[in-house]
Length: 125
Image (cartoon, rainbow, N blue to C red; front, side, top):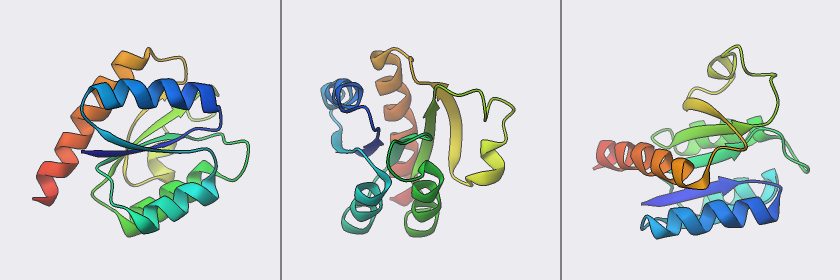
């Protein structure tokens, strides 16, 4: 299973990456929207863990590119903002499956990413 993590906080992204690798995933970590879009052009992913608020670029841009180029990939939106707490992210991102608070325990995030990644991988086969 391949997972893309898009997270501006390099230390947090690395923690998430290590937990997902322990679950057997191959993980690509990107810190901004440009590198994430490039990763979507270079590789295929089963799940995308996307922080909606990036220091450089726009998380929704990444979601749009993912929906177009890899519509099977489930997007797990992560944020520390209450902006999308009303569920409106599902109107903006067709492949969004859920939103999580950025402080979700890394083990839980890895379990969730594995679950949704396996669903995507099974659907493509």
